Length: 212
Image 1 (cartoon, rainbow, N blue to C red):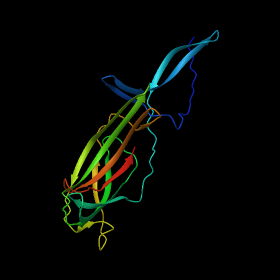
Image 2 (image 1 turned 180 degrees about the vertical axis):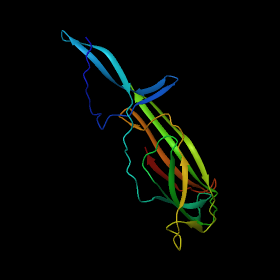
Image 3 (image 1 turned 90 degrees about the vertical axis):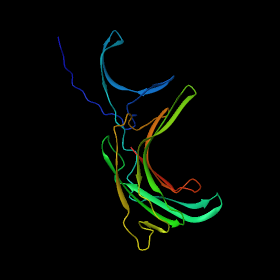
């Protein structure tokens, strides 16, 4: 006869996210999940059917209500100071889905004699996996925005006098291939990076905000 036996189970909180990377040469990695149904007979289990399912990444990062900040001294020819530039930023959420808009608040105070040509905002994916003493690492920009310039001795945000509102921009998250994943052998992480671009002979403040 035919029988139906309903059941349910809880996916562990520390279960790694489902993950598949196509092979690049000899390198490849995957984490897959499935529910298997088996029949036990004479002490042996015979698996007769399995159903794959996908585990999504948990929200590993808390929303940071405070700005993440960086300040760099602007150096010309590696030793001549031209003042300093401060950069600070935060996001509205700690996790985003494909085709969602990420809202980013940032502030810049340019206390130098150099013009900030642009503020670059990037969504970056880092992938690392290892097995049998072989390691693979890659980092790539998924999407990039270039925001406006800041003249010397000017800016916006909490450090200006008088303080002003931060700049708000939206970054469209495209369709991504891999969900965030953290295991001892496989790591996929995402972060939003902001950087002020001031020229080839000066230091550029940079802020990285981890997201899932």
